Image 1 (cartoon, helix red, strand yellow):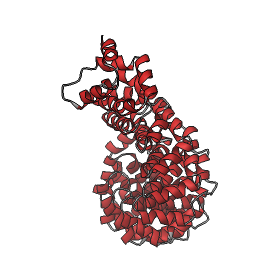
Image 2 (cartoon, helix red, strand yellow; image 1 turned 45 degrees about the horizontal axis):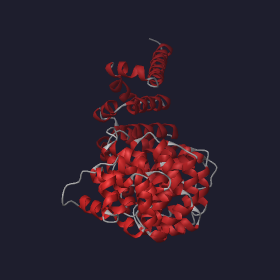
Image 3 (cartoon, one colour; image 1 turned 180 degrees about the vertical axis):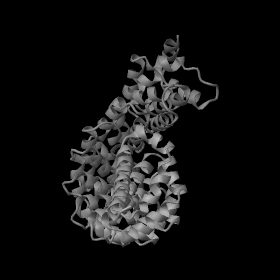
Length: 491
């Protein structure tokens, strides 16, 4: 065989390998092909090609493996069991930027599925190499590495700590300062994933100087970047008063309120979540948000969106109102109660209704004035029907019952209470009748109205256990009237 023929054989072999990896990489983009590829033993065929002498074959083999591993945890598991990870990690440090991106993609695709698979990546020494890639000259390599590190960190505190211990955080903070928007997004997302698990991990991100840089990007025109920035700031602020105050000191107010009007639903939701995470900690932080116009802005936001986007805003109003009478009154003055009542009536999801009920309970529980502000929106019958509705979730029933109890125990506005006398079960009726027994002895006009409206007649129809609290309340009401009126209404 001549030299030319030998070279032709090698050429054909190279062409065949190239065609094979390109075809597999292409087939792996379509879900319907995955099972066939798996059954054909494609993993064991791709593994040696990661060591191929031709760089493009190596890169395409890695890309194909990444696409397969990305598809489900079985295939990701096959990458681990096939002893492919050590090879990737070794090559990640040695090869060109195209290979580095493809190898980091495989690590991300494997690590995203479960803590166990992410741990396998840590165990094979990938973190140190990925962190080195964060310093690469090529922004695409940095991005791929940041993405893989974020996917590993998001599972739990231990994995997040491993990412921190590898020295990723200061480099991720440098990445959010790079000019490339895609790199900024992924780095902010990774910082969010690291921060979310514990105050200590969030503190590590803060100590690396992340907050000031994140705060500067709140007004960036890129919606996807804003989402990640707001998410990272929320994950930091949620853990403690100190961490929340650091966000405030970075002057995120009133800038963050503009995000509540954003056209992107996730930007709105993440902005409301950030405000909620700050408001929940102390009355002082809530007051600061009120002073910045935050309560009115959140109420507007709730009015302009639907579904889960509303949820953090609803909860934020509940947290603010829970702190004190004055803060609850700030929610009332900003017309928060009618908006929460709308959410309670028109939302379909039980968990959103439950949050609205809880927030209304936090507003109404302070004083008779607060309770009246809630009651006049005619929300009490809605709460009662949701509590009694057999199809309501257990959580919704618990929250509506607690809200009713909170509001009823303070409510002295009898016109709002009277309709409930007809429908309420005994455990709620007790609180309603209790309020009548407090007000009627001291209010002659209310006593007259109670007779003409049929309220007194309804009370006579209640079957109460002798000696019970409910019976005591009924006796107190009856004692407000001459005996013949009580007798006439009871007949």
